[in-house]
Amino acid sequence: MNQYRYFIKQLEHILSGEGCRIVNLEGHPFDPGMAAKAVNLDDFAPEDLLVVDQMLEPVIMGDQGLVKMGTVLLRKVIR
Image (cartoon, rainbow, N blue to C red; front, side):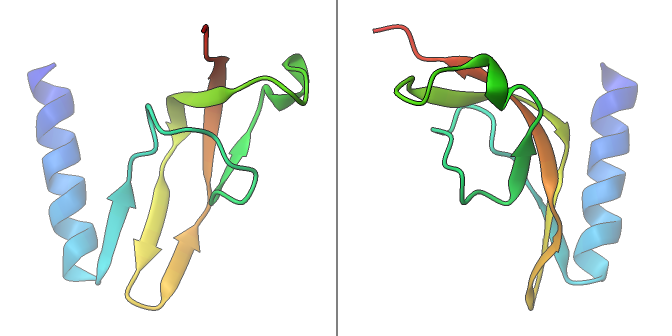
């Protein structure tokens, strides 16, 4: 875990030097307009309420907007 935290900290430092940042969508309600592709969207019904369970690839934003779309796994909200 310490190596992972160190890697993320270094990555964020390098990206910020280029005017970019990583956006973490985990735990946020899923919206089809998000800057991320959901790899398991077809597993759910259109009426299901979904949240981002895991970020597989990060969303990278720059000063001018989106640099790279992310990839996420979704999960159904149990009511």
